[in-house]
Length: 228
Image (cartoon, rainbow, N blue to C red; front, side):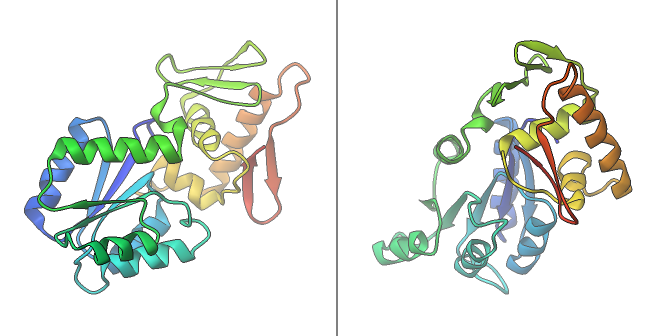
């Protein structure tokens, strides 16, 4: 995973989804596109994005239903969602927000307005994504310089360990399974054995706990790992 926030666009109008992909990529986001509600639910389960742009009118499962289902699952309960709709009607807007959308934008809209809304929602919900430097406890990750410090001392990490820590630090205390870490850090299109995650977690632990520092990574039996 790079430090580019991942935007998942669920939109069945091909012209619009192409436009969204082009413009959001240019703005520095990693963008994934999907045209179908059912497929979106499956893909979001496999690889959690940072924010979802969700069209109200979709084939098979409506955007409202996708939003409702995402809000029912513990993993996606707090996932930022912006709904796109051609319906400017007030009651629809209220219904969209009541279902759990974080924001709402009516078509037609300006791309600059949409990307400003995306940034605003991300800043509000996960401030760490908008920053070059992220910290948790005495650990500081500087994304632009690709450096990590703990208690003021440099921590030397390989690129994979850096990406693992960068992912953990966005969700302190949250437990991730090996599969979730594989998808987030290696990508779902790469075949890597789950054992590999353990090896890199071990390296990350040793680097962070050098010089008798407490180990900040917790192993959760049969579930996975968390950064505490």
